[in-house]
Image 1 (tube, one colour):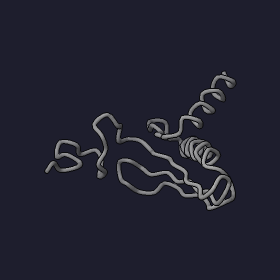
Image 2: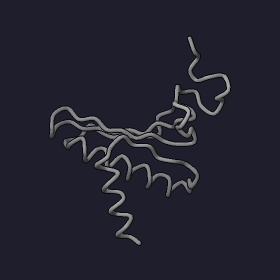
Image 3: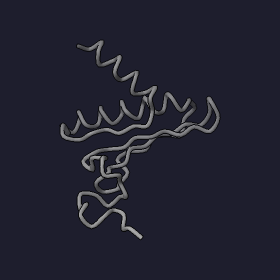
Image 4: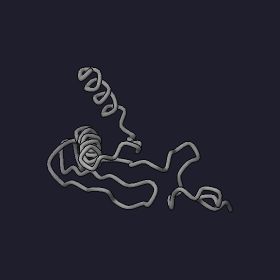
Length: 105
């Protein structure tokens, strides 16, 4: 059985796919009902540590996914972090971020 992470991958403690950059944060949200109790968090992919967690509050999953990205970007700006990638599995939140970025140019 293969070891995960593989022995050659010493940039993370997590079982990440080869194409995923370990110098990154991953954000995700969850919601019970729509709307309902919603929360989101951010995990550092190098260490597996939780960077932040927010909630639960009343909301929707789409709002939580969007806020998680915004929270991660704000924290990176506050701490002067410029070399990390943010991963999100939300297509809707990514589209909103692309539209906001285009509007700010």
